Image 1 (tube, helix red, strand yellow):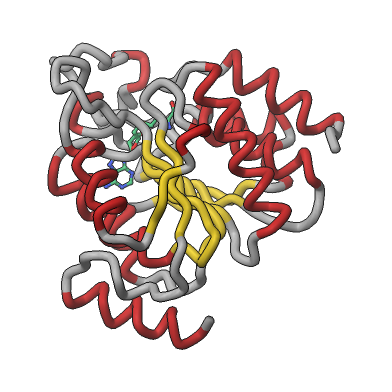
Image 2: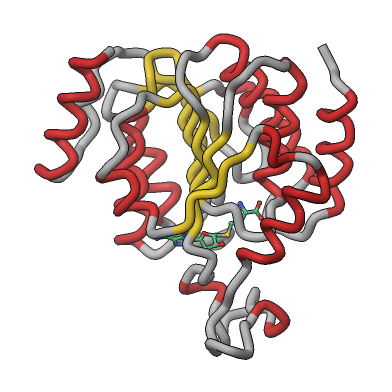
Length: 239
Ligand SMILES: C[S@@+](CC[C@H](N)C(=O)[O-])C[C@H]1O[C@@H](n2cnc3c(N)ncnc32)[C@H](O)[C@@H]1O
């Protein structure tokens, strides 16, 4: 079922700057709609940036109605690869007061202007810290935060155990060929598949987007550091 809000969110998403192409965005719409229809828990994205992926995910939720929410996590200071000196750096995103990148204002304006704030809640902070304190099982996790090895791995290890059975774990910037892009998202995606906890929805793959589905209820079966494991076990007990 399409709603007017979903249609306008989709149009807004397509015209919002970001790092996702439209075909990848449409896969996010489909995955979010499935999560909102079938899942029990909320949805989480890591890396809202200026709101492009947030709006695609919100469009998927809005397309099925209901009360499901998306928590969009970002510290809004930009990943390492978005800082000055890197190819994707945008000097217009530097806050003159702090001298640091700050995308929160642009992200928030995109949410309010589009009406996405009806289904989206912004969470401002470091994603690994937030994962450490998070215990609610999730119907969808979209990982598109920092791509440095330690940051990407912390996202995978922190958030993958929280995906509920049948829920989606989605990675962006998965490049099997190293000449196309960096390794960390690809390596985390491979680890998720090899863990046996997730199977790939092969038909959902497009561009560098990969969609995995949790096939086990056990949240402690994805490689995690000790601190995360205790959270993962209590999550499993709560299910
Ligand atoms: C590649 S951009 C996300 C692009 C976005 N998904 C889109 O559709 O265009 C990565 C974002 O992750 C955020 N980020 C990087 N490391 C983070 C961390 N450890 N915690 C929270 N946010 C982080 C950055 O601030 C940046 O906005």
